[in-house]
Image (cartoon, rainbow, N blue to C red; front, side):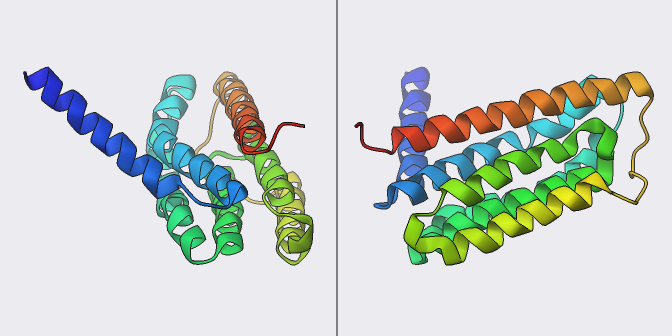
Length: 191
């Protein structure tokens, strides 16, 4: 009986999450789902950093500072759809630049700017260029900043650990790009 009660509670929680992510605008709904998936994965990132590099997990916990931004995307989108979609890109930029400052450019943390660039481009319709262009420009500037990052990282890594983190971040950024592609494709009508 206890297992049935737990399963029922899980279904209720899942329905509440789905309801929170839902939106009549398919692009906002896609951004809401992506934001909640990213937020749910944020607690894992420091664990992966610690596992891959042997250190840096505690510093990587600071990336959790962006979690409330990701969690707020659906609420903001409910009030103003383009603002909610913009918040997803801005939260991603903030999270990525923070990870870059903590872990350094050699770890590939800046690779997460690629999903930010993609989101800035596809989260908006052609009549919403006034939202898309500044976000795309911000992501492009962030890429330049990351390329010429002048500061030492908070955490230093041995070359092997840095390579392991690079592999981890390549997989993470690639997986996020795949998620974005599949999520937006699911919301588009078949042709």
